[in-house]
Length: 170
Image 1 (cartoon, rainbow, N blue to C red):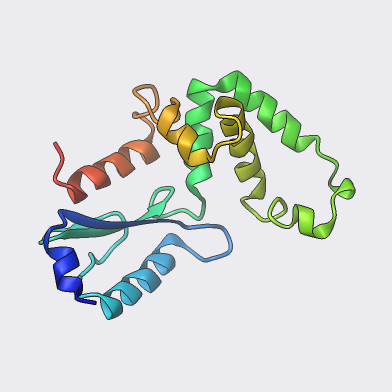
Image 2: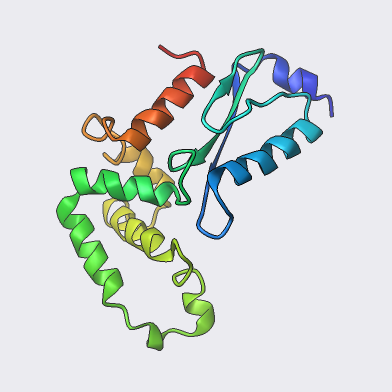
């Protein structure tokens, strides 16, 4: 495959990933991905997470939630929900916290007992109330998770700035 043809018309190539809890710090995840991309594609990446290398195309890697801490997208969404859906968030937290894990088989609770499992379950509960039966991506797109009310949050504004620089937006 001719990667040059694929890259020539792109304004920006960005990669977004979670730092997670068990994968090490954001910078370690960034370095692994940067090396893999640069070995595989004729594309240079910036030297640190969250920054943009200007070129044709621009390139960058953003490690959620803030290019430095070991957390996930759900960390940001929970902060947003405290502002736009405080009562719904409170109910979702209560529901997840009162679960009797002894009723679940090990396969059933495998993801829930991971370090970010509870956060993901709470966000999923909120998202499923807002958009029943749909993926959380649909709720993020359709609902107020990221809105005028939450743009002032550091993690949200930092990510917005990254995207604006990556895609040459005002």
